[in-house]
Amino acid sequence: MRHILLLDLKDEADLIARYERHHAPGAVPEAVTASIRAAGVTAMEIFRSGNRLVMVVEAEAGFDSAGQSNPSTAAWEAMMDEFQQRLPWAPPGRKWVPAARIFSLDEQGDR
Image (cartoon, rainbow, N blue to C red; front, side, top):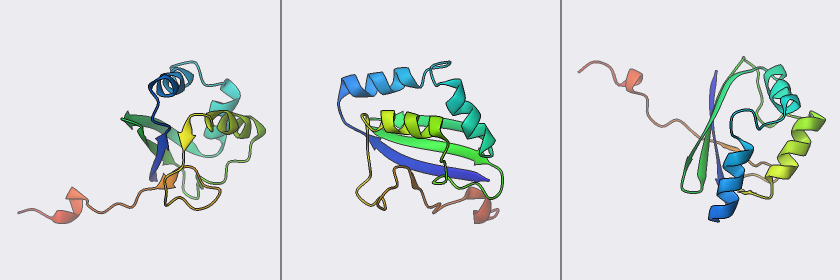
């Protein structure tokens, strides 16, 4: 199942550059990536435009993006708080907000 999640970074060039360095290949601690995989995530990518982040997650059925409680992941998320700001409509305690799909070409039929 695919999940699309949104979050903003603080709009400061130096913080954005540091955030990207933390996510460079091999930079995320192995304990964090192992925890993500153990939670049922089979693929994950983060894209950035300006200070807006879009995370695309492919996960096994039943995956809950809010349900991560591994200590390594919790420490990583706490460290990432320096760079991130919640979207104004994010529920309390939630950083990454699910995006609602409003269009699918596959559902448009042949014309």
